[in-house]
Image 1 (cartoon, rainbow, N blue to C red):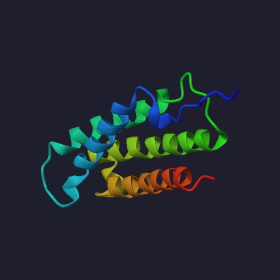
Image 2 (image 1 turned 180 degrees about the vertical axis):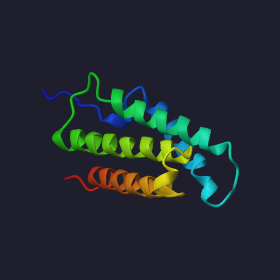
Image 3 (image 1 turned 135 degrees about the horizontal axis):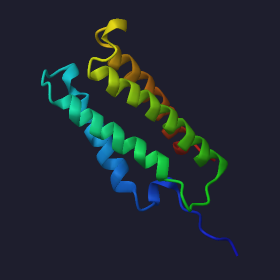
Length: 121
């Protein structure tokens, strides 16, 4: 008899993923809208997103593909943390809008990881 394996998206911390993703997207809006307080929203969203991928696989039996997706999203979380640090101006000596570069790199890894899940066999 086969046991049902849970996916990371079906666990009890899904609200952390959703709120983190939404706050990160909302905090990235200053590309078009200048509002200085959104950098705090961005940092909180990045922290929630990172926390989700640090605790999401506890107690779950996951396939190799799902473990790979989690590792890619953890790498994206590191890039998002660097982006949040740069958003506060701590990396301005390397470039004024460096946070957008790291945000773009993180988005590439996030989209690739989600495409792996979408097209899995």
